Image 1 (cartoon, rainbow, N blue to C red):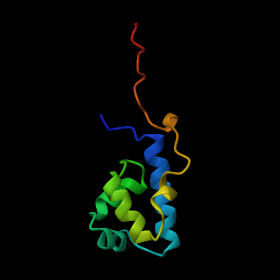
Image 2: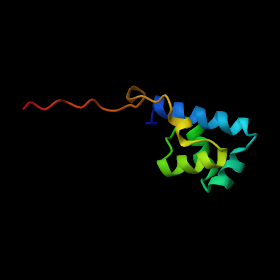
Image 3: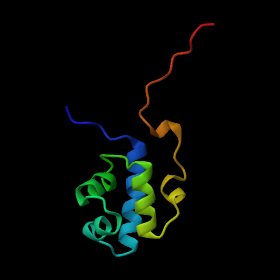
Image 4: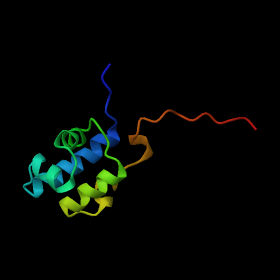
Length: 89
């Protein structure tokens, strides 16, 4: 069964894609500048995967953006997290 992307992955991916296009950079260009495989870059920009912090820092540097640009506006509700049950005292 295919994984359903989270809204958070889509949010971050859209920001990466926007910055990549603004800089007239191809997926291969971004991959070369970051050392991240272009298939992973595509997974991020399509929202199928969420980059690790290390990958996000490398992408930020290559695109000339602060890392916060890619996550500013994220909320817990955008992540598909299971609800935590409160334990009775």
